[in-house]
Length: 215
Image (cartoon, rainbow, N blue to C red):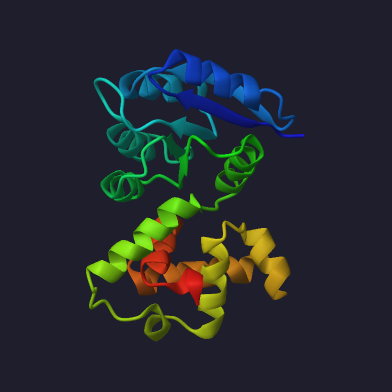
């Protein structure tokens, strides 16, 4: 069994160690290190090459948003899940813009957190339900004039994007829609191009903003 290598970044020692202790009990996860701020997180990622980083937002020195941006720029194979007590709208959008593959609140159930790590490691994206609601509400309140996603994508592409919003991997999408993984990858490439999205996470964010997740 290939273990998923996980790093934990949080300025509160008790939270770091508590998360590490909980996740160490999960058979397919391996905790490879901890850091207390963004600068230390960059050093940790450079040294340990984790698959997934659990990243707090508010930290002294380099905060979680800046650290996420640098990790995604310098170590593109490492995925980041922002894990925080704050569901502030700006933190959500800043984190996603920085390249985070997920945004979860610290009250998430340990089993849900482990599942989120697996999903992100497999190429998926995860948003906490409370965060998803905020993203949708913001889109409604700003009364965006962006063309509806249904005008940009084919029905098949919409189906695939909807499953991406749910955190499905390419393999899971292929199985559910009776397609090959290669066909799914091609569809995702077309989706990103049509939406002008740089990656899956940004495509998922656009889908949530435009209400595809609730159609």
